Length: 269
Image (cartoon, rainbow, N blue to C red; front, side, top):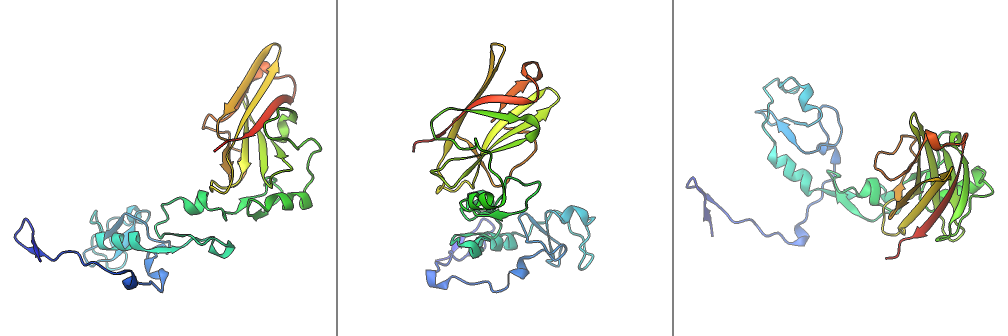
């Protein structure tokens, strides 16, 4: 049965397709921007001839279509946007073992953060360009780099950590997990920021961890407690802005070494 529209026209009801009628797109190149050849993303704009440009190229065109020179303004290409929303492709980590399918527009966050097959970088990022699965990084590090003698810890047990501020990173490990934890110092004009991260994606296959860290000097104590430790794919040397850190002002520093107490614990489900 047809249904009436406000302008008096009629529209057939939406066709109900069966699962067996799902189509397959054989050439994903047709979904690339014809200007920069990057994958198209929403929003898409079009000229009167139907040529499209995606949001990053559109502002650079001077409102003129590069294909036919007709004006290209704010007219959206809704049909093509619908196509993009409907296309599902294998995760880019499929060759590494991932079996998940993700939207072509890649707005799910799966590939960047949640895929357990996302590649992690060696924490010695300034001198080593190795990348691998989160549970393989430890083996690489043991073979290629030197672990400090006091790098081991036990979950739930506080331990002393002595770290030179200029070292910037201190790699920690536990015998019971093939995971890396990185203690980092960030020197700023007003003091030192200290944070602890786990090198792993946000996949549910990796347990959650919390940490508590403190530093004392001259009867004063700086401390920070994180109910859930941040997980990262790559060590960054940019001072954290997410408040997940301990701050030690210059007035409490004694030389270039921090003597801290750190406790890393598992977060119970």
